Length: 136
Image 1 (cartoon, rainbow, N blue to C red):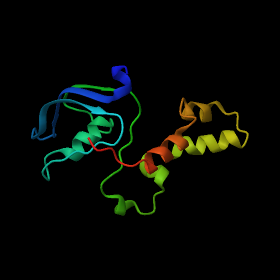
Image 2: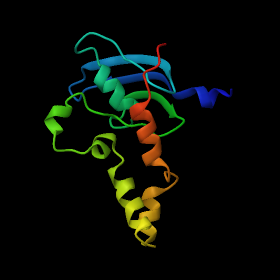
Image 3: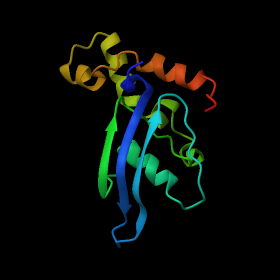
Image 4: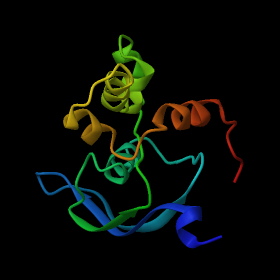
């Protein structure tokens, strides 16, 4: 199997420093395989920040990041967003809204731009949500 089909994210030399200069972490390198992955560490060690960097919600201070596919970040504070839908928590709500508009007959180019290559996003999301965790 080619490397790109096994590895979802690779990163090298990632560093995140806060505006006051405090470093959250420095020089992290590694890879994340496709499938369910766990991240373990002490409270305050930068796990959530690393995940936000890997999903491109936070820019690293330095280092490189390569993603083979889109990813989603579901906050650990889901209860604070109890009014949110699963699609909103997964970050796919705009795509699903555009898909519904196209299914209803819309030919607006903007709807197609939002969907991009994600015509099967609902099926992929459902498959990930019901898939049992992999033990690695």
